[in-house]
Image 1 (tube, rainbow, N blue to C red):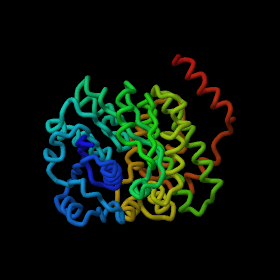
Image 2: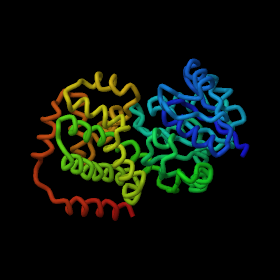
Image 3: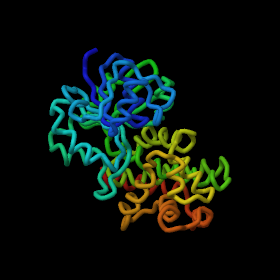
Amino acid sequence: MDKLIGIIGAGSWATAIATLLAKKNYPVRLWARRQSLAEEINSTRENSQYLPGVRIPPNIEATADLEQALWKAEVVVYGVPSHAFRETVRLSLPFSSHSSLYINIAKGIEEASLCRLSEIFAEEAGPEMPARFVTLSGPSHAEEVGRELPTAIVAASSPIDSAGLVQDLFMSETFRVYTNPDVTGVELGGALKNIIALGTGIAEGLGFGDNTRAALMTRGLAEISRLGISMGASPLTFAGLAGVGDLIVTCTSRYSRNRRAGIAIGAGHTVEDALEQVKMVVEGIRTTRAVHRLIAGCNFEMPITDQIYKVLFEELSPKAAVNNLMTRGRTGEMEEVAQLAVRLIKKV
């Protein structure tokens, strides 16, 4: 195969994706922000900082030159954190072709604009380009993809044709890709599950058990679905890989940065100390702040998100947050389902 792929970013997930594609015999150029990291990857065939123990195939060339990384690339993959996404898109577009297929593998919401990442790409690239833009999301830790453990994920685009191209590009014996036209739902599922993972981590840091984790995950999924449906997403998306699937893996895995940060916070560490311990981007912290602004004035509640926000940014103790959640006014689970159904009917 000779389809050249340019991957922007050299963190754990970008490196795992590069490795996956290279093992399918695609030539890959991997852009690293630091020259020293690019040199390490090229000389040692390992990204020891972000994906240690995974052998990087010889058909991956790392570079710190963005123009070189994207020269003649037919596929452009964005693997940078959400807070750097807009600037990276802006810098990369002059070096890429309008006919390229663009794929985003990051998850998050931009704090300043409250835009989803596909919306940012549309603003920066122009009205015609989003048809070539695909969001890749789902339960997929880089450490396991790099080791070729079986993984299933979702490619979302509108129109769906571009997602089908990504499906063909990525599918392998260990990496299965499903398509979904609901870009909004797939993006929100990937972003919002990080908030709930912070919460389950905080509960674990407090010494709570499986019952607490299950309650937070289930009620967290209800919050994600409520917000998603209000923004035009399909409720079915949240029952799939990009919804409950990603939520499960992020709330339970030892690889989850958000869970690990939450554990540290629940154990009494500050947010700054927790970030220092994780040593990588914890998307859920920024996403919590963005969603808190997003739902201001809305006519529905996201109590878990609200309490996590207060722990992160208003110095509420984790124990007090749990008490606030447990002592909320009584409500019926089916009443909430009925309310969701009414919202859906109104949209139709």
